[in-house]
Length: 263
Image (cartoon, rainbow, N blue to C red; front, side, top):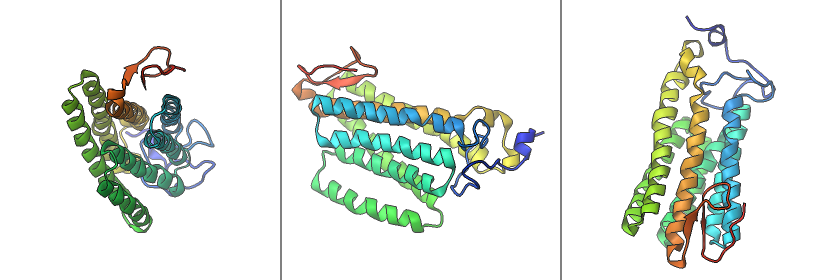
């Protein structure tokens, strides 16, 4: 028998009827009248903080502008996630999903060292994708398939770079980035999608709802991209003496020899 919470329709709160799609496992407006999915929103904050922390360290270490943009893009993904899960409105979903596409495309350009062809393709593809997103009927499926495609290319490219460099540290970073992010998608995002998103609200398994799978997925979505950008910086600046360290820092960072490490 489904619980009373499951048997009823989704609660309405400050932001009104959800206009975004999909509605995840977490029960709406249970913790706060002003936050649609409290735990999914709260778990998005580390993405913002990781992006801002990486941006600060990247600027202090004097890395190229492309890495600053990459870290900033990661922070924007977190902001978009907060906007979507906090409101469940289409406007928040668009910020969430479009920022994810733009972010991973930026990662790919950085990984490919911005060759003219790749850079030009992204400059054409991203505006075209953004336009198509707003006119597509099945915009969520369109987003998911596009995102998986770009992430797949990025993973393959990163593995080739890491194993070609013959660096144990880079191999570990790529393994963490790919393993945790792809693992989170396979073990958290997909089960939730099939057991909640594609299921009537009253038929959602109580155990799955209580596990807060999407909130845990946000944590893997923090660790994965953060590890990837560490790898990208290390791979790019290894010949200039870049190295990974945790000394005197809140999170692991890549530092250049002679540069000051700061919190």
